[in-house]
Length: 262
Ligand code: GLN
Image (cartoon, rainbow, N blue to C red; front, top):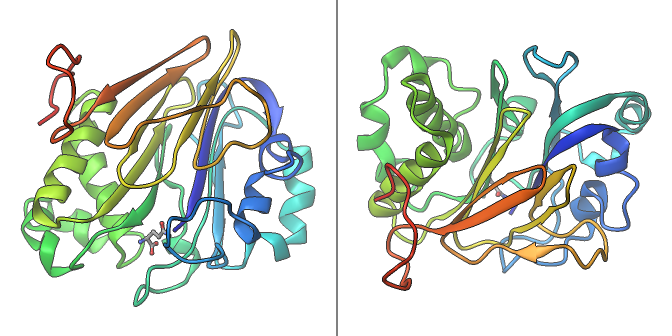
């Protein structure tokens, strides 16, 4: 299963998140610690998205190579700074193609998105959900993969103005209903906030006064990392984060809910 992370805060180099920490994303690509049976390494490509201008659209680099073997990216990452980053290292699900378009992040405007997991019964199980999308969205999928379809479903909700957390929660609930047993760790940022689901896979969050980080696995031994409970949505921005139970979770009666969560 893939590993992914998102950061918002003061501008930092991509290398400070993806290369330099003890358990950076590149370390997680060849030595992940918590794959929960979903593969062993994340060798099937990687990608990083960031914001060259404070209010401008995201830029992306994606490759089908193992992250650890792309030494050109290592050099570029050391020289690229941004106040928002989303990156992922991919372990392709059996039967899914390996090319740069299948690697996260998926993007539109300032939105950057990643999926860690698998849609069970792909593609038949989610044919009905796909059929509800505009045909042009299906014709222009980045790749014929579960993750690319999940992005199309999330993007469709974002385009109609749905709250980002509700968009992730709604898609996770719909896909889990159509494809039981799916693993649906979704990750989304607009460069100022981070929204993510923990749905049958590992996820941690760390916030301080100035920044927020959400990652499949903690990047370092900092005691500020907190695990996100399974079947929860986490929303994070500098100084704060909040975990909200998602549909179907045996949660306390007084658990908070958000618009659109089913
Ligand atoms: N199923 C997705 C893919 O093949 C994501 C894989 C993963 O999380 N390892 O791209």
